[in-house]
Image (tube, rainbow, N blue to C red):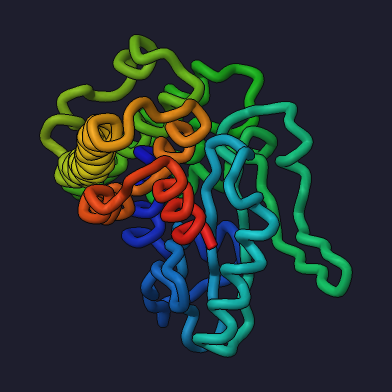
Length: 292
């Protein structure tokens, strides 16, 4: 998530740099579009509209090739939603960030019986770093590019970052560079060339950190709700079994297994009607009723 957020920030702040690199064209009349596409919401990494060319540049950044659903199907889904919403030419590029021998990073299309959908893929570790060194917004990606001397490349990127005149831009690019370089370099080496202080002072780092914290809190809330519901269900289950045992005597193992599968709402319903039961047959009939 950290790498996704970093790269989304770079594309939103420096869309011209990515357009020059990926489309080999100049564009100033661009518009950053919403990345949450319509229908059942899914969120793309970056969606940029080139107004004069009437074209969309859609980027997906993948640290690892594994994806659920599989990446080719996701790319088709993104394309259909974008085309339905904007009805224009769409250039899709998947940029793989971390070196891997997985065959998945060579797959550039989705194929089904009646459908074939193609998109571009870039394995950043195979790319010439020189085009990436030309523009501030691409410097962080340059640390992941092809080189026989990774340390020298990292130093070269650090020099380019230090030459950025506007201080806030320099700080933001420095932070993004450090975050992405962490995919392939040890922290100690990164600190040799780039200021660690930029991380603490940078607004983008704080934004990424806060977003991560919010997502963590949300996951914690969701997990807490799920755990609370399950704990409530287990408590209700124990109560229902005690009441049934008092009412009917011991409950055979088969019926107990069926009781274990009931939801909290079903257990609450059973708790209301079990006082009318006079035998296990009544319980079995009730279970058969709710399962039919």
